[in-house]
Length: 353
Image (cartoon, rainbow, N blue to C red; front, top):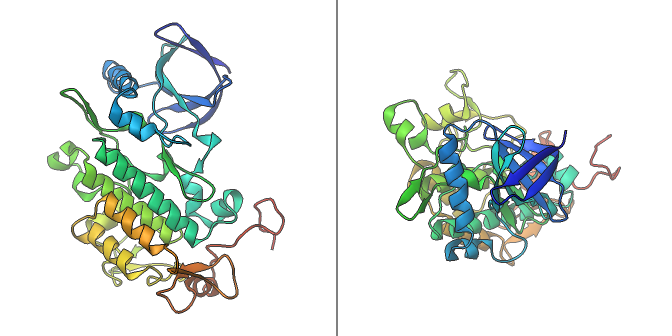
């Protein structure tokens, strides 16, 4: 069904097909010569407040701090360009750049099937590059006074080589406009810092900040570098029931912090595949003082600098740090899993072996 939307100035667009959606809203392709999509939010908690938030974000496109973030190509942020509403049902939303033109969904880089289907040449070096690109973008966002607040794979994009990362769902960010604070309230289980988890008053009222973004960054970097494994994944080793990633987080169940705290399948990537310095950063992020995004960007760049990576003698898709004397991906494959299978021999992203 074609949906017509209109801006306050009277410009109309036709939304041709639904291409995505989540808890906040629905995303549609725009029938326009330019690469655009539209996000519609049918039931915001406060419609007037949501309209004001989008209008302020659109206005901030002209501010120097936002201009700096949007500079260069490809554009890395799906920033709201113009507020719109549907003609028929008066649903609010906005038009933004279509990230599909230059990027792939970030989540595809986090699983062997996704890599094989969308990024068949990806290796651990690709994952390192993507982690560095994400850290650099987040550091830039923080430097300009914005807080993402709900950083998770569903609002991230990555290019084929992993060298550029993009972000969407800018309308959920926390920011100030003049003296007015537009608070970030969205949370995603598994990517929320511990101080914002829980039903108690303090956690419920806690607003995101750069430090809570840095926690989510560390989770995402761990998933990238550990072939999709969440740092708080695993069945409790004390025999209690597994409840959720957040429960493991609040109880300190993390292999990097305490190898005896969780039980993981034998096919999980080896715990010691990371360079020593990155292991230290992860432990600080999850159990100490969180490193800021700029520190992550610097150390990830160092980890993939010339001479810091090597290629397995038997599998060209098995790239690993020179700090490890043998291939961790071959070790994992011997236990029944292949994180970097490379291109499908059938050329269609499938494995018919």
